Image 1 (cartoon, helix red, strand yellow):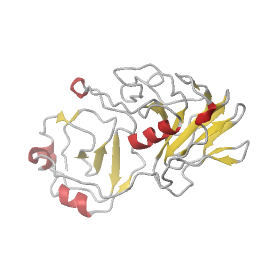
Image 2 (cartoon, rainbow, N blue to C red):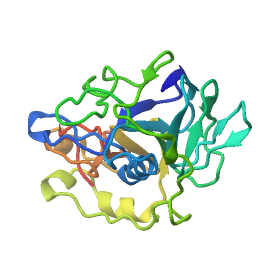
Image 3 (tube, one colour):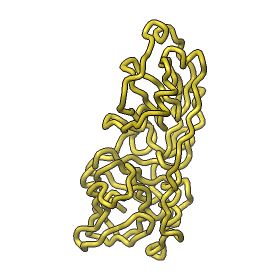
Length: 269
């Protein structure tokens, strides 16, 4: 059982069961990195799609209210137990003793990535809402009251577990997902026409992820893509999916992410 003493930048409860309700305007949601969520859960002895914590960039800090087993995967965000001077590297499960704390200081391990996953043996106990236990921040439902965690929240397991889960390690120590090229397809002609030469600019430019990015969309910083304001202004909103690249009026691309709206009217590159 863990208590949140510092919330961190954005820590939410997520699972591996995206909601299949786009026809009702509900974002799919779920873990940003489903593979790492599954790794953390399996190391903790849970089902791969159970609810766990998604930690973004820096923070949080937890107090162990009783001895428990936790597992970490995803980005290396500097997890450690300060009272014991013990570092908790991703890709393994650990025994966390009552009276100690677990702290994430931020990306210090050189592995890259923005999100880490913390699984508790027995899985995080929150109600299922619309087929998932994950937090939908735009809709303010799911997870823990539809919000990011804050100081004072208590996280308890939903199932019984035992300490034998501690000490597990992912079999392949190069356990992180392989990074490679991203396949990009041109958008529908009626949506891509208002953004002149958008596809060519997208595939030939080096982009940087903007600080304003979140689970709704990944904003990219780089050259402005020319948008015809008159034509773009006449686009009718239609269905969108995570992974679509929209060009906002300022000419910057946004990659729709897991909490993105299910409809929109911006040009698509």
